[in-house]
Amino acid sequence: MGYQVSNPLFAEEIKQSFARQSIMGLLGAELNLIEPGIVEITIASRKDLTQQHGYLHAGVVATIADSAAGYAAYSLMPAGSEVLSVEFKVNLLRPAKGAAFLARAEVIKPGRTLTVVHADVFGISETGARKLLATLQGTMFCMAHAQG
Amino acid sequence: MGYQVSNPLFAEEIKQSFARQSIMGLLGAELNLIEPGIVEITIASRKDLTQQHGYLHAGVVATIADSAAGYAAYSLMPAGSEVLSVEFKVNLLRPAKGAAFLARAEVIKPGRTLTVVHADVFGISETGARKLLATLQGTMFCMAHAQG
Amino acid sequence: MGYQVSNPLFAEEIKQSFARQSIMGLLGAELNLIEPGIVEITIASRKDLTQQHGYLHAGVVATIADSAAGYAAYSLMPAGSEVLSVEFKVNLLRPAKGAAFLARAEVIKPGRTLTVVHADVFGISETGARKLLATLQGTMFCMAHAQG
Amino acid sequence: MGYQVSNPLFAEEIKQSFARQSIMGLLGAELNLIEPGIVEITIASRKDLTQQHGYLHAGVVATIADSAAGYAAYSLMPAGSEVLSVEFKVNLLRPAKGAAFLARAEVIKPGRTLTVVHADVFGISETGARKLLATLQGTMFCMAHAQG
Image 1 (cartoon, rainbow over the protein chains, first blue to last red):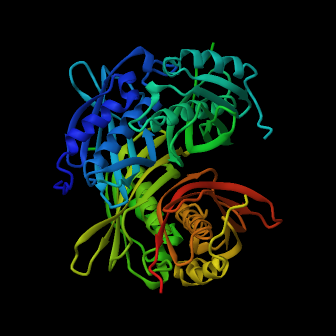
Image 2 (cartoon, each protein chain N blue to C red):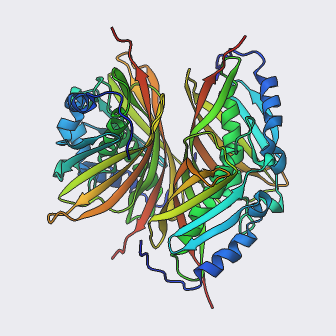
C-alpha cells in the first residue's frame, strides 16, 4: 500500500535474519515474498509438525504467522533496528489441513516504536487452492540500535 | 481450585494424546504435571528452537503454552471429547532466555462448549530460578464424540 | 463477499435488537449499514465519551466495534438465534480523534457455533475523511433458540 | 507484589485523571482502590448500560477494565508520564449480571515503555457475592512528558 521504506537493504537483512532463526530451519520454513510492509513464509506439510488429530499444530501456525508479522514490520523500520514481538492473537478458523501452508503478513499501522500487523495463514491444497485457516493480529516493537 | 472432573481417565488420555502430538517430539517437549484444570509442559533450551537473537522463538513459547492450555481444558471435559484451540493471545514480557522453559496452564472458566484458559511461560535458570516470560489467554472448544 | 443468509429477516431483527441495546442510546450510536456479514455503527464526537486527554475512550471504541461485530455475525445466523461475544481483541492505532466515529465489522468466518469477525474503527473528520483508529478481531457465539 | 513506585503522587494524579475521563461520569464509574500496580473501578447496574438481553454490554465491561488497567500501569510510571492503551483482549466468561460491577486490574510486568496488565471484572450480587464475568490482558504505553 505504498509504505515508505527507510532502510534500502531491508530485503537482504530479512533474508539474513531469517537464516539465523534456527527454528525456521527445524520447521522447514522458507521466505516466499518480501515487499515493503508485506512478508510471506511457507512450510510444507510434515508429519512431525502435527497435533493429536494429524493437523498442523496451532503453535506452528502461530510461529510462521508471527515470524512473517515480525519481518513485515521490520521491512519498514530504519536501518540498524531490531524487531521484537510484543503480543499477538491468533484465531483458528478451521482444522489446519493442507499439502503446504502459507503465512502472509501485512503491516496495518507502522510506527516509530510500535507497529501493528495482521497475518493470515492459508492451507494450500495439492492443486494450489488456498483456504484461510487462521488470522493473527499483533504488535511489534522496534528496538533502535546504537550504530557506528 | 477444586474443579469437578467428569472423565476419570483424563490423565492417561492426556498422556496418550500428547504422545500423538508429533510436534512435541520435534521440540523435545514433555508433560511435567497433569491435574484437574492444570497442565504443565517443559522443554529444554536448544539452539534449533531460537529466533535471530538466540532467544526461544515466540512461536515456540506459544506452542507449548497452547498445548498446555488445551490439555488443561481437556482434563475437565467429558470422556470421548476432543479439544480444539479457538483462539489465544500471547503477551511476550521479556526475551525468552533460560536453560529450560515451563508452560503452566490453568482453567479460568470451564464450560460445556467453551473453556477459557490462562497460561504462563517461565524461563528456568540452571539454578532452578523461574522468571515469567510470557502470558497467554485463550479459548478451547470441546467437540463431543459419538460413542458406542 | 457473498455470504449465505439463512434468516431473511436479519436486517429488521438487527434494528430491533439494536434498539434494545440501551447503551447504544446512551452513547448516541446509530446503525449505518446492515448487509449480509457486514454491519456499521456510527457515533458523533461528544465530550462525555472521552478519556483524560479528550480523545474517545478506548472502551467506547471497543463498544461500538463489538456491537457491530456481534450484529455482523448475527446477520448470518439462523432465525431465532441469539448472539453473544466470546472474546475480542482491540489494537488501538492512534489517538481517537474525529468529528464522528464509524465502526465497520465484517465476518471473516461464519460457523454454526462460532463466528470470527473483524472490525475497523475510523475517525471521520468534518470534511468526511476517514482515518483508521483501531482494529478488532473477535469471536461471536450463536445460541440457538427453541422455537415454537 | 511490592512494585516500586517512582511517582509519590500517583494516587492523587490518578484521581485527577479519572475525574477528567468524562465517560466515567456518564457510566457512573468510581475509583474503588488505588495501590501500587493495582486499581479497582466500580459501577452500579443501570438499565442504560445494557445490551439487548438486559446484561451489562461487553463494551462497558471492557471500558471499566481498560481504565482500571491503564491506571494500574500509570501507578508505576514516572511523574509526568501519560498512559495510552496499546491493545487489550477481553474474554467474556458469563452473561454480565449483577447489582454492581467491579473491575480489578493488576500489573503483570511493568516496563519503561510498555506495561502488561491483567484485569478481572466481577459481578457483585446484592449480598456482596462476587462472580468472575470477564478477564482482560492488555498492554499500556508510557509516554514521557517534557517537564519544566
